[in-house]
Length: 392
Image 1 (cartoon, rainbow, N blue to C red):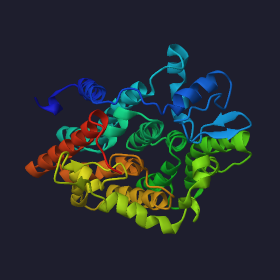
Image 2: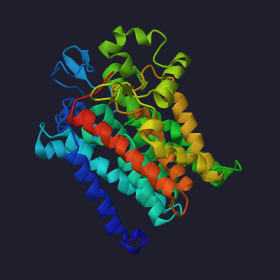
Image 3: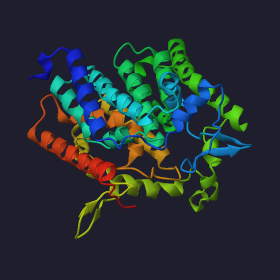
Image 4: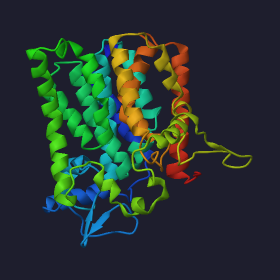
């Protein structure tokens, strides 16, 4: 069966259907860390806070008998229709699986717009869905993971628009909506500025007009976030909620602040150096919930270095480097997780580079690396979700 011979909508349905089934079958069922379902229910009832403080939701911010969710609220906003229909008991994991299965469809559609072959677009999409820790994140759906999935939804749409009509206000809105799920996504902005440089250079009246359109779209959600934080904490900063989480206030790790150059080595170790635990008895190789290096969880990522120099490649690297630098200043590395989950904040740009590295006709080495990536992530999902075997 040749992908390029199939109707595009059939391919979309195929990607969504297979992904949904596999995510569902390998899921950990309902996550107890359902901050966003609870927050969606609060929004429906005209509140910015929760009324209950379950012991396992230890990152709620208590103020005068009200309990505030620290994380940006976009996932809760998307959950509102589902919670309104199915009630406060709606499964956050089910929503994660649904949206998590939709993002690979958007990716495939996006990749088709950069004039690569259908088979390369499909191989890269399979790599994203099953060869990265995105599989684990989607199958669990806890609030930290769902934030990545929602952010990717809007970021992928923003990139797709960049390869299409390039409506700058819409791109800004989508990037801003992604920011309202994962604040660090805003630092992928260099990709859009560099790839669409003809709209912004040379500096003239038209270029200024275009920049205003782009930043107005982004500004909508930056403004909403500032208002949201001010109404809750009398602070405009997107960092302020994290500073008020009780465990964070007591943690020794924040002595250098929530953002510090001293944290960079921690993230380099987590993304590039951290390995699974190897032992002489069952389970022999055990995933670490602290982190595992990206080249271990996703061996096919090495194909990014085969992408030939171009404006698109430069734009992708600008987003990856800038975003990772900002992320690496953060006080923690994403624990608990399979792999280094913060890489999902710039994963679309890695995937574009992988697709360009694969080329128009995937070679056997590309299929081998894809297979290895799938095997590693299947191992991680089974070990953690089903066997409850991991190490710190």
